[in-house]
Image (cartoon, rainbow, N blue to C red; front, side, top):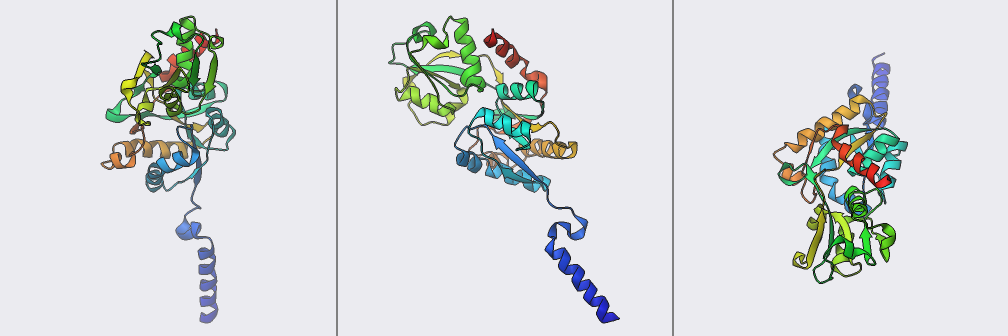
Length: 283
């Protein structure tokens, strides 16, 4: 009888080892898929965010699985279709996703010194002979992505206010990344370009040769979002961990190499000024 009992115990133990997620009554580890707008290449983003993802996994016990995206639209499609559970987007992308599909705002990002805002800008080379926005007519111009807040929405709306339309340029390029737009201006591949002010931290150029023709009003930095049907328990767990990590003594190390330096709770109305600009552009 004792031998039979021992055999049953061994069989039960072998079953637990075969399914380690259920040891001690625990369920299998939850996995959430994460995607990010293409500030860098897909591999570059995955590498840059690896430390943050690691800390979030340690804090929550939730595994984060990387999902690459090549465009801003790609991120929206993945989150709203359920191919990704959470994502980092720009303000324009958030407004588009929220107003047309429904997503959940998890938190806003902060830059160094807990700054909540950033700016769009239009740049040229100082030796370009371009001194005003009207001088851009007939010139080659670079944007980033049509769903980019600072790389298209805000600068294009301001250009229209100044009487400059897309068809007024001799050539228009969409270069995806903010650093690409700034580099294209610096190297003379285009005469002027729109980009985020944060791009200056991502390129190694002589900024004494760059002229800022225009700078936007402050824009709240981009948010992290979740698909609208992500369970509250998972949403709240990830959100709380992101806010906690922002105040960690190791925060500088965790966010090293990222323009994001922390997170803050936000609300949908924070991006109403973006909606106003969208309406102006559509007019």
